[in-house]
Image (cartoon, rainbow, N blue to C red; front, top):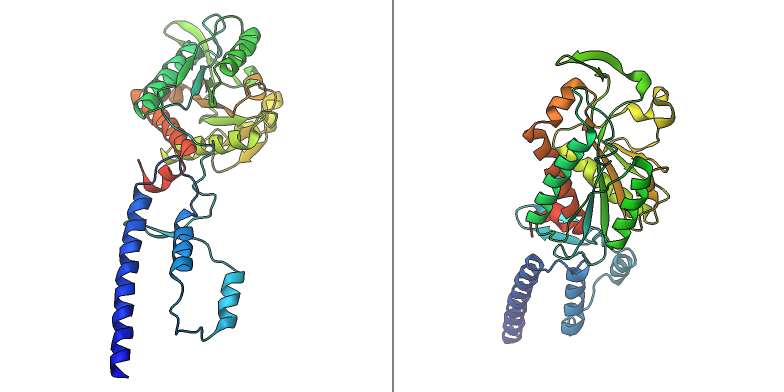
Length: 332
């Protein structure tokens, strides 16, 4: 009898050591998991599969079958232990990219430079055209994305008058088979809110009443839900950089420029009438990076520090959008 007990104990130790080795291998596999694999449930499934093949010890019977049945009827959330982070509860969809099989090297982000050289958009408090701000920031975002491996990033420059140029840029983005469309702009206010002042001997206009970034999406976009997901990532990252969003779009004083706020935490607004958001055949977002009609914020928008904050925030949002694991684990 004692010899049998010893054999059973020894067998348990050997089985335990095999299980330990299996767990170590599984965790290592998780760390090396390629980007294309997106189902967070694969690790628990391995354990389930292993248990099915190995089977329970032949002489051991469940003492409480009823409790075991209840557990199987109400499965708990999958838990994946991340190194140095403790246990993290992740739903099965948490690691699913917003776009299927996003490979940064082939994923095409189109950065639309708002307005044109012929139709320059808003004029800043110091008489600088919005188009200049848009072009500079879009170039910086493109550089950061390419440095992060998004080699197919495209800068979209359009010529011509305002409204015809909108349809041109939509057609170009669709022809490029873009995976993601982001239009870069800088904000102003309705004319009725402008005040007069003089800068360097020239008459100009300003409004120091409002400031901040804004993110817009359209419910008429064929992929509105994905557009909204990306917009919220941008807002979240800009907020993490210490920036605040412009709240005036909810106020009646904005008149026809008043828009519903979809997320009061991230500053995402609904703007259904925007052609570049409605007519593009891919997820599309428009970013108003900041107010250039506000004299203080104009100076900030002109600084390398602010430009770097915004471009870094947008690049991080694109990486998260491509692979949500990046937000949890950092660079993969």
